[in-house]
Length: 142
Image (spheres, rainbow, N blue to C red):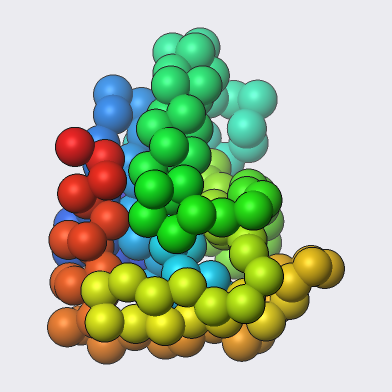
């Protein structure tokens, strides 16, 4: 796994794994169910990913959207490809909703709704919360 994947807590945050992608819990949660969708390759540009990664992306995003719909009943979903600090190809996946959502013992409001996500209001999870939320979300990917 590349350093970006490791920075986001792999393997403790692993929710689902595909041939070219991993779905990780985002350890700082601006909205409940925030994920990181990271390419396994060493590519630092989206266009440099292998063809198989692009082909697989539709299946992976469909699985993410179905799982998060069940878990948090989002109204919208944002895929943010920021890559300013962590250079390897990855997206921050943020389910968006009005109000708050609860799961795995956590309740998190979408502080930026209906505008841009407010990443500065993210809830930093401790190790026990990471484990609980990761396990809870995994059940929606089965």
